[in-house]
Image 1 (tube, rainbow, N blue to C red):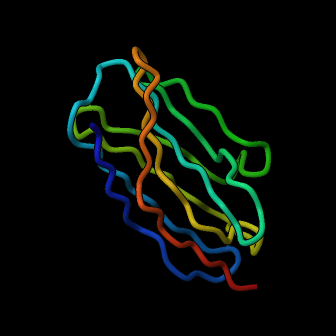
Image 2 (spheres, rainbow, N blue to C red):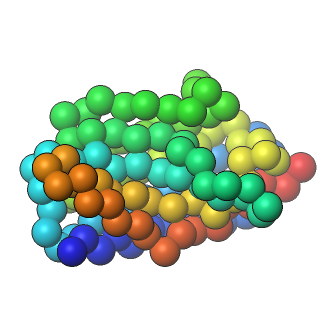
Length: 117
């Protein structure tokens, strides 16, 4: 089992910045991917960004150039730096961990990000 604890959400004006953090604990594999997904009201959950334990990252087109995902493998923590936030970035952001061996996936409880226009 893997437990994920997220922090850093909140209310920000359009154009502002927020930094999300997600700390993983439990049965952490050396080969894994961690990432952020989001779900806005009435919409399906979508991938925002992911990063592997080797450092390869991937972003949804709508956040490229504005969001940066990073990780600290020693702390089993992934970060999402969100700059130039837009109203449409408003959503509950969920941290995800996927084991690179078993492909088991775990989710955090979610953290609300609200961008006021």
